[in-house]
Image (cartoon, rainbow, N blue to C red; front, side):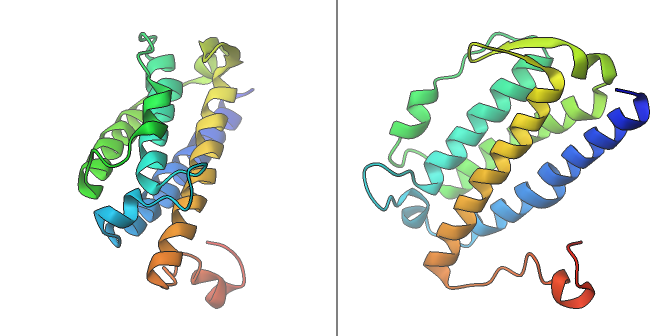
Length: 170
């Protein structure tokens, strides 16, 4: 991977996480009550609160702990067993702090970080795999949060309204 490709990959990853997925998810959650944030359609599904706790754990483990070579203290099962211990605003604050850490990590990564190997959740992965996993995983759960928020509110959040003006995504 050359430095230009490294910069392009990291900038694209930052843009998706911090300019698209995170602010849009935060906007969705801010439109809901605490009860709606913790609502589950059935016992096999997760509420938005669980998804936010899960993303917090994932981003912290895969991005902050791995690239900072910190001990992994994640309790993944607790992310899914919680049934409402935090308010929507507290969830936003917690995930926001983790996203800030991730932003700082992405801002300093270089080619050697992306080529290095990391042990995460029993997987031996490259730094490139690590960043890609976080972006892809965050995008998947952002889509779930968006769907649930739209189901509750009936609101088109207008995230793709630029398609109507230009004919392509912005």
